[in-house]
Length: 390
Image 1 (cartoon, one colour):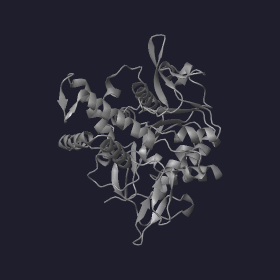
Image 2 (spheres, helix red, strand yellow):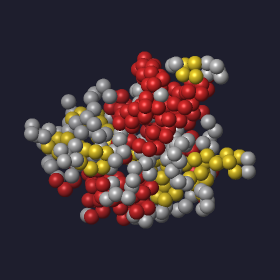
Image 3 (cartoon, helix red, strand yellow):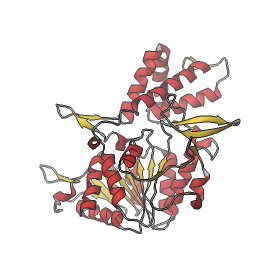
Image 4 (tube, rainbow, N blue to C red):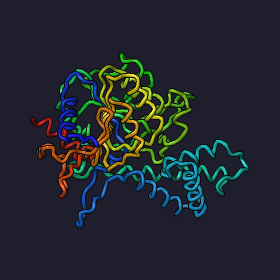
């Protein structure tokens, strides 16, 4: 079996990231949020914001406490997800609830709930999400690797702005970028009550210049809400909305108007990947959103000049769909702790590779096996800072 040199993989990525004329974007999933936190006295990691399984557990607990019928309905929904080959995490549960609500008549029942009760359960879940992903950010800033990420952004001199696509609802990136005094554009315009302006994502003349970092929150945000202005609805950015009404983990994000943020941000991701010599670095994302995957894989197939680095936190095996896809796309690099896919070839990391301790992302086991930890967002951000210090 072919082996890969982890140090060369790190060096190649560093070379991409240091090019001033490279178009660079990051796609960040839940793993980047749960990298913020601290360890307790026993060394256990306590994330400030839980990953998707933890978020699902909290939502289920709150729903069950609110109404015993909700607990029974949740169990049924989990069973339906498994029967259909889906995961049974909170996004899938919300999707099914919203589809059920659309399909039900006023007097109908599904999973033991009336149409109104389905709506109540959905609202309960959204409120629980807001409570869970909106912690106090006034704590020690060093618990946020996002600050290190923002410092790297602030020190880089680039021809093109850095773009951040995040699937998270929390405000960790906003907080970090503002703390480092970095100008950010997120698709909202205005001063007293900024509103989402879809055209700014499709017409380059509307967007601020290269000194503005771009932040696209593809699944919505806890500080977005709907507002009615002169009889028409707008999506506005403001204080955290307890209702969580602009959280989009559902089928609705795919079939509503293109003015809806999810569609506009998905189109923006596609446009970015179509740019010549574009680089997308994927962090904390398990490739579970098929619509996002379609955009990424489609771009890789359409242009050999587009490159994607999929940095994975957990070890993966040869049956992984991501590795299979990487075997077909030479411009998709997968780097997990135990193996990599480079140039269409899947293999473990070479034990013979020299260790460069300064990188901080390559570990050696007792048997000499190399483990590449670029997919750990905290360690990736330390790696970025080491580049700034060189």
